[in-house]
Length: 379
Image (cartoon, rainbow, N blue to C red; front, top):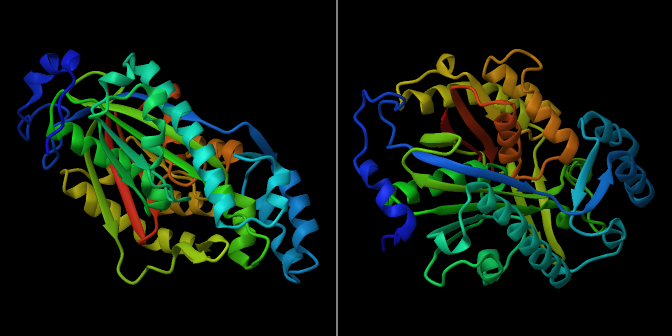
């Protein structure tokens, strides 16, 4: 069922109903008609967890029960993280929690972050909630039915006939994939306003009952956050989305994801992720860009999801980026940790404030194991 374009924006967008030809300026061959990225906003919960405090608490909680903890403890320093934001006070995580308690925290904290990020994005675009025609919600760290967007509709002033598309299971790649999905929706009905929101509460997967190396890494790496964007087919905004692409590698289902336990979600986080990205991302990126008649040499800036310090180093190697050039990625990781799907959008916001390069590729790696990209041209 097609989206109903908002009245105030439909007329201005009609001239962009037909996609420009392959030779049109700023449109790559093989790419779709551009979509304007009108706004981008981020939101973080109020509770701050300094990395030094996280290490101290982890040592108190785990060292007696996990003999290998001291060998793992350096990960708290090697992540490059200074602090993270979490949805509950630290004391909440020090008690055993079951599924209902985690679900309650996910719904309450997730909706608040959703509304915060979405409200900021609407204000940035100077668009009211009633003008939004579709909402794409990305989240993989909790389960809510009705989904987070349904709970947020009244608070944002969204119309009852707004199309809702909640997407689960994309993990760290979700922010980039969600942006690509939102662009496809915007292209499908020129003039329609599409809101995309990525919300993750990774801290709710912190576990006291089951300890593995992956669980220790998770306590050192993950934080909570949300990001939101407003898109519309045509010109305007601070960037144009000209294409999106994904590549999923066969036989990689066990590299990243969740395990489902009686008390909650548990992280699957293979040590091989940096090595796999180093060896395989380069050829995959060239293949995705070739469909747009581009190569990695045409890209002025790769804007990447910073999964961790070792992942950033692997990305620089795989994409032939000079060591240390992914400074926005390192800064976001230091200030917020890995928030899963919103993290790449946090990096994009820093790149926007610094001044977007003419041609950027936003990218992230996620469960599947999947690489997801969106091609951006600065307005």
